[in-house]
Image (tube, rainbow, N blue to C red; front, top):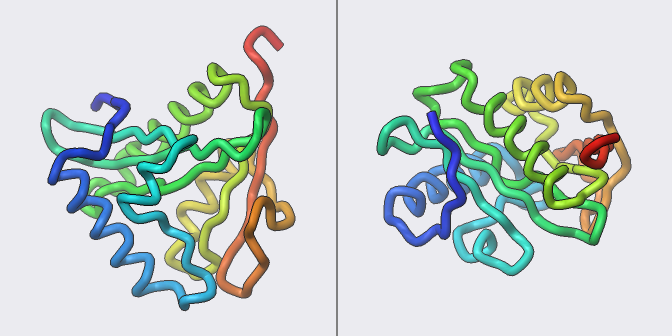
Length: 156
């Protein structure tokens, strides 16, 4: 598997993300939906990566710059056929390393509170993320959970 920066121009990643948004919208009520669509992920300040096995997309993730020290994890997704195969672990490890390289000192994220999202919350906890208050423009709802972790600068 390789993880590459993606400019979001190909039809395969567009389909992969459309499935992601469709699934998130089917699980979470309107007031808890924060999945970015293709245009949202093309916004300035967002870096997007695709995980590939050969030419097959097996996952994706993004970092959204919130300020000079804080980035948000966005659009973490593993292909349903590849869940529990290490794709999400590799992507999250890659995101943390890239965030550190970019100079961020903290990563935060918003995820769902429903049972469907428990594997994601376990993964984030495994990587040192802890519960936190809403950040950025988010407001707390019964449908979301907020998590954050510090990132040491290179050499710390």
